[in-house]
Image 1 (cartoon, rainbow, N blue to C red):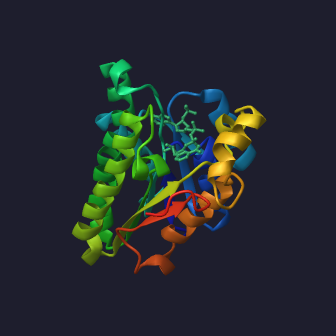
Image 2 (image 1 turned 60 degrees about the vertical axis):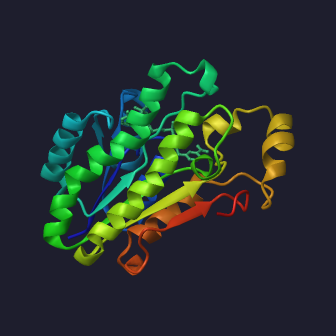
Length: 241
Ligand code: NDP
């Protein structure tokens, strides 16, 4: 029987690349999403990957979603905490709603989701928890106090979960992407992309979603058992922590 992987926000962008790469690597994959039914259905039909809708910021919805995935695919061996949003503005203009939405989706989701799978992983003495942070959680970013706080929290959370569960065959790691050529980044006008973004990346180009996905596939595999509590930066050398 193939291992089961759940990718939150697995229907679009980097998450979609992760879902597809895990499927290619032989996993039974569930991809969750928030509300964009059209994109999710297209993703499901194109890739033959099961999709599930719930809000990762809602604890009870996460528990129900996990039960549903496990009923359809089997016990979850690999959890990829990928779902994320931005609500950018400087702190002096930030209202509580922008703060809360980003913390709920990008950080509280890690508690909501990981709490829901950890007991089963501990009982079965095997698990992989991979959480997607960001270069901006490592270095901070103008206009992103909410996002940077959440993404830095992902790293502290992961180091703690790694320590608590190492003896149970469970690893927890972070992948921290830099600028990845998703639709949002590619929509930036070319001259700004070149002068302001690519000029800061030593490798001289944007990353590809598949390059992030390949790192996740390694961390999801049995081969990565000695890697835990680590942060793998995938940023073309833009920031070396
Ligand atoms: P996208 O905006 O392309 O996709 C986001 C996915 O997350 C969608 O499937 C979306 O569902 C889902 N999602 C959003 N909010 C929720 C929620 N509350 N509950 C459940 N699912 C939700 O994201 P990216 O591919 O750009 O980013 C993926 C991850 O990588 C994020 O954590 C992001 O912070 C991180 N990252 C991205 C970088 C980049 O360059 N793009 C750089 C560094 C880090 P739906 O389709 O229904 O909205």
